[in-house]
Length: 161
Image (cartoon, rainbow, N blue to C red; front, side):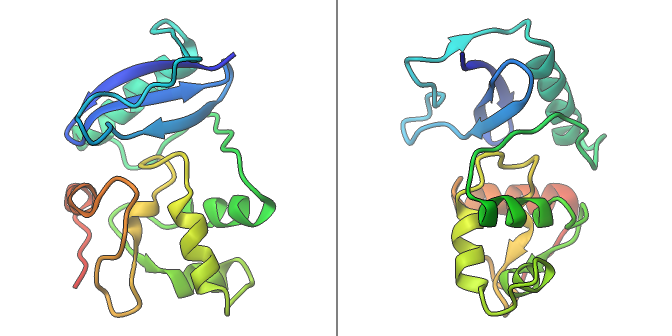
């Protein structure tokens, strides 16, 4: 069963999704501003893992948390999983590039494939895909929109060209 809770944040109302034991997704609001919630999901505001995620994300947005300590279980290919693990090693307040991330997973010529995996990250904010920028230092795409990427980088004191 898939359960969820909602968190009001500076990025809009986030849907935090869980399999009951792990955080499996963080969804930005839909284009109309309403929370992204699937019909099959059941709301559970008392779930321990979702309460923990809600609390840690609230601390992050308040500037009181730089790392997350949550049980994660994103669904993806082995390659995507490797990229998402590498994202977790990009420190708070720092940025990296798709090429550097490709090199970090031992695939130095796979920057475009890494970009696709970064874009497929189901755990935005907690798995910090917002910290990845273009090779020339410019901001590149972000599933939540570039305005949200800018807000997250500013919250962390990170800079892009």
